[in-house]
Structure formats: C-alpha cells, structure tokens
Length: 286
Image 1 (cartoon, rainbow, N blue to C red):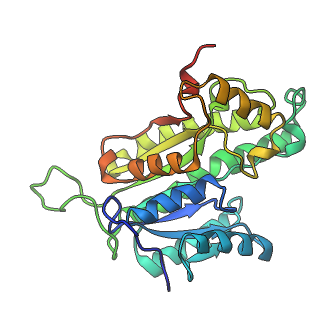
Image 2: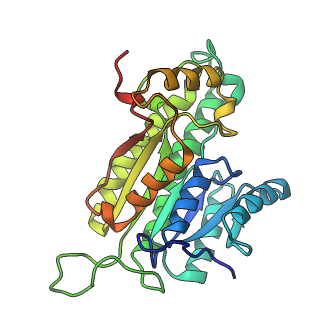
C-alpha cells in the first residue's frame, strides 16, 4: 500500500496518523496533510460515504503525491462506522501518533442572518454532534492507539529513569473565530465551534496523563465548500482582509504549517490551547 512519505522529512519523521476531512484540494485538512507529509509523516485518510465523495477525496490525495492511499469511508455520525475505521487502523498498524479532525456540519438554510433564534432542535443537535461531539468520539477511539505498542514511533524512551513518558500523541481540530464572537450568519455553527473548543480543553485535561495533547486551530476565513455555505462569507473575508494587521486573509498552507508544529514534538508542552491563525484579525478591537 502506497502510504504517504515525507518529501522534506524531519519534523514528523516516524509518525503516523489519521486525517479526517479532506473534501478537495481547498480543504483545511488538505493543507494540513500536505504539510504533515512534507515533514515526514504517514497519513491515513477517511472520506464521506458514497462513490462521489470517495472520488473527490481520492483526487485530492493523489495531488499530494499518494497513488495508493489508506482510505476508508466513514460517517462520523455513526458509532458503528467510527468503530469499524479505528478497529481497522488497529489491525493494520497497531498504533497512531496523531489525529486531525477537520469536519463540521450545519444545515445551510440556517446559516443566514435572522435565522438563529428559530433554529430547529434537530438542526442544532446535528450541528453539535458532527462539529463537536465527533472530536470526542474520535479521541476516545484514537487514545488507546496512541498508548499502544505497534510499529509507530513512540514519544519518550520508555526507560524507567526517563522523565519523558513513553507513548502518547497529539490531536487537533479546526475551529473558527465565530466560536468566541458573534459573526453575521454563522449562527448555530458558532455555538458548535464553541462546544468544540471547550471539548478540546476537557479532552486535554483527561488525556494529559497519557501524554496525549489536544488542541484546536482557529483559522481565518478560507474559501472552502463548507465556508461558502455561510451567508455573507465573501463580505466577511473582505472585512478580514481590510482589518487584519497583516492586511490579508490567511493562506491554507499557513494553517497546515501550524498544524504540523502542534502535532510534532516541538509542541510537546502545548495542550488545551486554541491557536489563532488568522493574520491577527482576532486581536483587533475595531
């Protein structure tokens, strides 16, 4: 099987992990995978169920230089699907070193101004389930694979005299500024992202003793399929470009490089954090 191998190598050498959320070559997950691969990681992938989604994801992965990827169909809203995928990872590899969660969902009909207060219960529940709960669901299944033996690289020497615990790994999910501030038309997705960021802190607290780090990245607006479902997205992107200290919107590759850092041993002391990669827009008052 043609798993990904690093082109530059170094930062992520010997590490293997699962990347969830590549829809096409404009997805944040795509840029994260590109950076991880370039720094030496092996990436495993999942796609949404269906032949169309499989073909779209496969094309994007092939652009990363992988002709025969480890690629599984997965409905993140299904516990049975989650179990199946992580059980296959356990059979095939024994352990993993990182997890990238880059998925979210909300009914686009409710991502419009004036449509928040009346959000139906089922729309609210689905948004929190897919956008936030699935990070917890994947973390609970990935954590045992980060603490097991197998062929993956383990953090620490495992020597009884070493101050570094053996095993462990890192998890990362994608958030957005709408989790912290009200963004026009972001609506229920903002609530879901706030839940995601809070979940990451509780996961970081619970998994820390296992030497597993859990963080989120709050990326600036990027023209992805999911972002375009948000009403006034173009206006929001233009406003960020106008007001951010760097005078532009973030590039996908910049988020990818930040992700590689957070998932690498260079960030061994960083957990429970939400890192803004948005050209500074989140710290501007007006």
